[in-house]
Length: 68
Image (cartoon, rainbow, N blue to C red; front, side, top):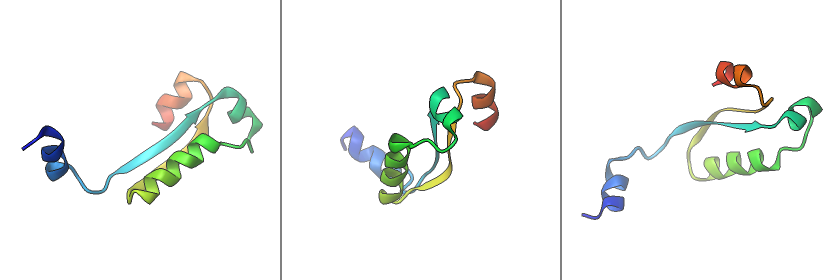
């Protein structure tokens, strides 16, 4: 069996992920438009997966580490 076919057989059919956009300017704007994050969330959900967490984070290692 080819590698990609074997992977599809043994991999989970549904996964749960978190989507974070890392952007200081978007984070500071509070109500910033997050087109890329929204696009990713929609693609994940349309593929039948779950989004456990979603947000815009400041480009700050402490904030990112705490949230993740």
